[in-house]
Image (tube, rainbow, N blue to C red):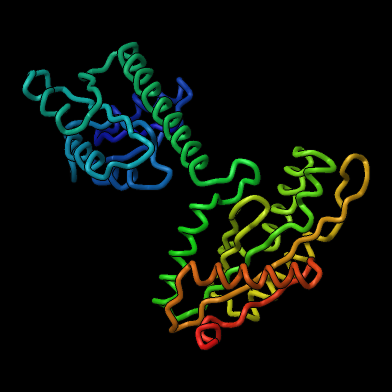
Length: 310
């Protein structure tokens, strides 16, 4: 674990550094409070800091206050090193945001116990952050495909439409539906259907740009958001996904299965306010036409302005 030593005394720094390196800590050194505060603001800041109380630039308690006001995650465990022994001084140090203190000259055994407690706190908080990220992932992702779930992809569409309107750029929407998916479930079972859906999602994601978004809209329907894409661009991107989906056959029940998908594309024109409901309805109508025209096709919907005049 990385640990910061901030002390303006060369002797004290060297003694602490030698002790901590012997205990296999990754030690970072600061010679004053200002340097310590600069180090603690870095993205790779140490998780534990030992701060001398009296230092040039910023005192140890001042560094503690700055760290706590910033409320950085993950947590930084702060240990004050002080020659002060009055109860009022120690209370002041703890109220500044320090987690613990050590009186100079420090005892190695006492320091080891303090750092062990700090490591437990830091490691527990890291575990809690991981658990929070897992819960957040579960709340926004479809458990089967790993794509955005319905509510998340619709939120993304709303955000992209607002951004597109502000920046006067188009937003493409593609609605995809796997062909003959019910037959897969009926013939090969739901586990095979799940495998087909996961593979189709994987192939479509492989064609998307880093800033595109794809989510499971419902059942075997997938919704793709294409920022900056007009109708032609959206059709082209949908065609790339179609070719990827119907590439190599899948093996179902030890027999090859040709996976295909139909696509309906629509787009929001720059300078024309479009709602997510309008775009999805237009893409859904285009998808319906793709199904009626034989499946495994891409159909582009008329512009919303053209639809409004019909």
